[in-house]
Length: 114
Image (cartoon, rainbow, N blue to C red; front, top):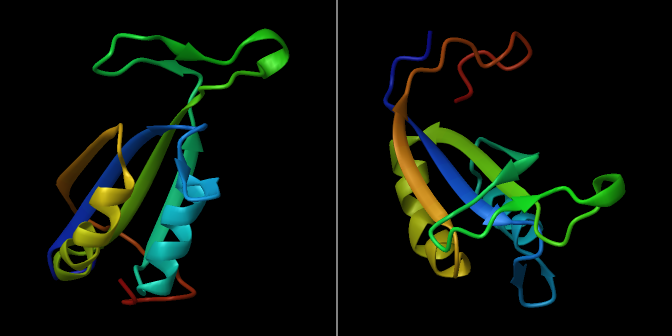
């Protein structure tokens, strides 16, 4: 088990959200990697809604302009807090949450790397 405090950053956005000329989720992944964050996973949602109560879902043949996207980031608390000033301004609409988490295993290939 990993002993130091871990945090899970959850970012909820739409697939169509942009940062400059790039999809927001891709820009955030690149930013996290560039800043040495341990890991991130981008998940494409089936359906959801946010503060505006506008339902987002996959449309006909799985195509939609506004599929919900969830990004899950896990690392040491210090690493997560260090990237917040960079990531928060990138998310113009969406929800960002920070949760305590307990890492049970980081995989046998990289023991103790988180």
